[in-house]
Length: 202
Image (cartoon, rainbow, N blue to C red; front, top):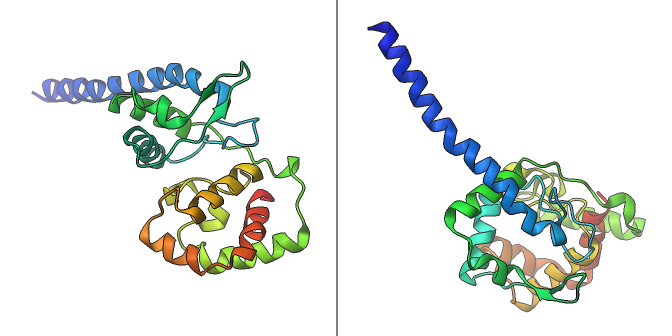
């Protein structure tokens, strides 16, 4: 009886493990389609494309679903061959299973900061740190370096990418959660660059 019970537990554990292994493998394969823009491991070499390595899987899933549904607009990006793509266009044909597999893959990669590659103004960085700690730290701990926040990773992102996203938030082209919108609107527009520099310096 005990052996039968143990065998049942083992069989059940294996049954649960198989989809995870398949998802991981599928995710690595699907991620190859993202390499031209985001790099093969999710760390982008292009200044207008964000690193997505190390983001939490729930955040990545939510983001890709938002692109697929059109809730988040895609920004046109020109490939090396001259063709243009955007995330909304690329995500529209992804299944829920594709999204889950890709999210799991990129969540398992290591985020690499671009701070050493970017020039920043120490005075602006200091001001930006003050503003960020006052307005943003509650949801984006340690300058957005903790994936457990499920809010993306901000510290060490490319400054041109951050600048573009701030402009989209400010114009209303990109939606924000209600809590973020209230805090964002309280930040003086003159401090946007300071916050961006602070994040890019981490």
